[in-house]
Length: 142
Length: 434
Image (cartoon, rainbow over all chains, first blue to last red; front, top):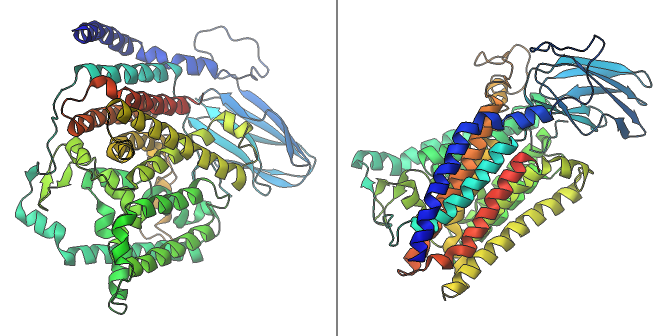
């Protein structure tokens, strides 16, 4: 008997929750895009105040010395469509390769090299040193 | 080098939105308890003898040894092309057909193929053809008498070995590794089949057992009198025999997919797995599988104890009910890999040996379109797969409990349902990336 009462009281609850899920599903995507606002950004020009902001561009920087990576390492969020520049300085000659986008940059020893691309493909991608196999950073576009 | 968390691939999925993860988890919990309280009180799915028979002509073709041998010969020819590409094709993973064909198109593609068409690998397994030819020379199978007692345990070992190669071994994506693996797999399983008889493939060949298990959720079944039937996939799943070792296979599949999810999290990449070597990977894989196994054993045994049933048979009794949960995990983790990076196989197949000027299908110049499926679609399929698998699992477990005891109390099933909820929330957590 008590089981049936519990069951009946669960039913409207499930409807309420289902209703919430239906109406708020589009909003549910918002926290992730809000969270993925770049740490870096606003290269140059004055603050943008208009509602459709032009992609501000993301500048990232990593250094490799003695096999250790410093700078903007780890998981780096970038908004979709952003123009991204990664400046890489390596103490040994190597080649940097961004998977998925398939862009590469030659890295002469000790000289900063730039990797530029528009972040038009959503997903999570590794930026890797071809020779050493070291992952410099993981780009999270979206 | 092209090493990602998965064997090959250029990308991984974005974390699912927090809201979607929470709604998914809430739905899983709610459906589970509603299932216990509101679902049927007597077994409802048809038994092993149920189903709508397919026309005789269809069955004749499907069961025809000649058709199977032809399909196996085709599969053998394709496998040899992949093996030759692995051995003699371009050394870079990005340009070599073999890693993509094995890890993406074959291993991941086996899931939708088996789900739509039934146990396909059983019908086309090229090793069955190799074995049939060799058994013309080697006529006796000395170990055949011992095979039934082994159940599906050999398959769990076979799958574990493959999954270690796929998810842990640092050189997994190298064409040379793929060549060595394919040769070793073919030699080992053909030799074991010569020792144990042709029955080995259905119990020891990990790929075939995987395909057969996934096919348990296809609409195609075989009635207990051998007739091919069309029936409710859940009826098909509940008719899975309680073979020893089935639980081990299911736990290995679930635990390894969970491990693949763990390796994609920032926590793993910057913490325990930061060394990105064999040792951390092996420990991670073993711990993931052990954790899933411990939870599963705990849930089934506690449920058995509450119901006053013998404990030893419980894990085997409920193993089939975890197949949909493992399948949901698999869809969530690999669906985008098959659709996006899987395009690479079709591009490289046009020129398997990387010879300049060769373009067999006119696709060699194509570029993989990584935007073919939107991140929203991927997220919804991921959460939908996990939740659908959970609902099917809970439904099957409820039915199995009623089959084991007509007057089974709903509360007895609570421990197993709680474990299933933990698997599902864990799975959603991994998709969210914690």
